[in-house]
Amino acid sequence: GWRATAEPYQGHVGSVEDVSWSPVEPGVLMSCGCDSTVRVWDARRRGGSAITVDEGHACDVNVISWNRLVNYLVVSGADDGSFRVWDLRSIRSSEPVALFKWHRDAITSVEWSPHESSTLAVSGA
Image (cartoon, rainbow, N blue to C red; front, side):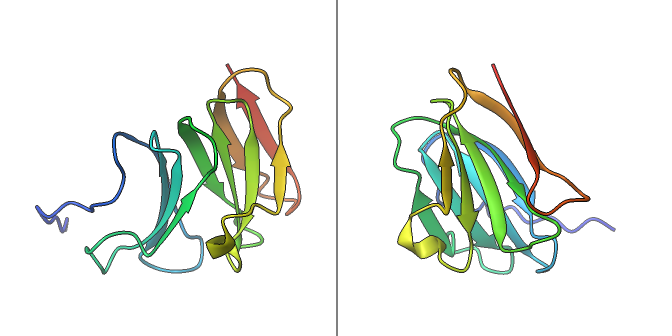
């Protein structure tokens, strides 16, 4: 059955915009929010996020997607029209492995291809 706890996860300041579960690590998920951060969480631990990355822009991070074929890659998209690819093996450096500014308006969806590890789709407003 369902298992729920009344104790919330603490970390983001303001709204959480998106969450994505790890494709390989049970209980590990990522979130992004209007505080311009991306966070990695261990669901077994309630004391706050395990890793916090300030995206570096002063705007909402709207969406994230975990690569199902290369499980250490994540993409995030933000209000300023940029999207970033993160390597979780070096995410503590707060430097993405790729930064793209191809959109003029907010990124509203990001998704890795389930068939090709280096292909992703990004849509904007």
